[in-house]
Length: 417
Image 1: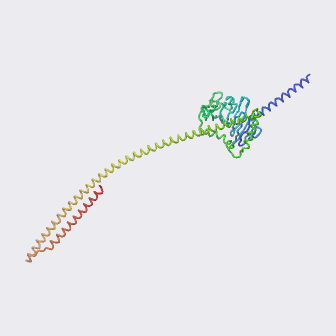
Image 2 (image 1 turned 180 degrees about the vertical axis):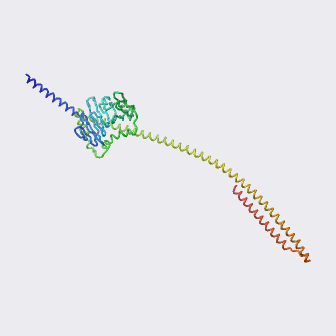
């Protein structure tokens, strides 16, 4: 009996261990998604990933420096893993018939961008991302998180509330044991640190946005590189179709899913274009306002300069008046001097002939005396004529000078007028 019991217990143990091994294998081989795009070296614990490879539950995906990958999940969610990152798919439950399920992923370090799919569309609270400082609860949207030493930054990309496309507004609940913060406006972010409640929602700055985009730079380059061919994309689509068929989807359902994805992409592109156009308009308005301000400032400066010039001209006019007055005074003084000189010259001219006449008279007296001595009375007319001629010449010269001065004075008056 004891031998039989030992044999039975051994068989039960063998059966239980085999069942446990099978369960473990099925859990390890539970399909989660497919690698869509890849750049650089991205590995798991056992293999190096390539475009089109399958991703299974509980696999740790590690992207090195300058590397990244994009994983397409079976519920049409997309997980984009940036450089220097480590991400694990902890839970993935999906029922394609009802779109019910649950997704839980954990980010140990690096960056992860999430675009929610059918599961979160059915139930927005069913997609969560665990980070060292807390949890991120997706509400049917697109968001990105960056995990660094002792800090986690989370950015809501969109769509947010009151969007122009009529899409259901998304949000991200950033929380831990000490509190929570809801991000519901596009391009708003919140930070979490160890031992503290999440910070308040703030609009992201340009420098912060550059840091978020830098984590995904390698993958963008891989997408835009000419090495990636259309054939690879077709193969990826085929694999997705096969997986969807294996999950129980029919052809029409697969087509409708693909169309929905294409429409979502188009709507996102339109939204991005509109946002860019609005930003450009805002920039143009700012530039116009700045130009107007600059014009006003320039006009004020010109007015000030004109005022200064007017003052200077007034001062100059006053100075000119003073100068004119001085010139007038000088002219009057010169005129007075000229008249005085003329008067003195006239006096001199009048006096000179009188003296000459006296000298002539003296000479005559002397001559008469001489003649009396000689007893010959002779009248000398020649010296009298010579004196008269000299006096006439001097008078003519004086008249000419006066006439020339008068002419000059008249010319000056005409010029001034």
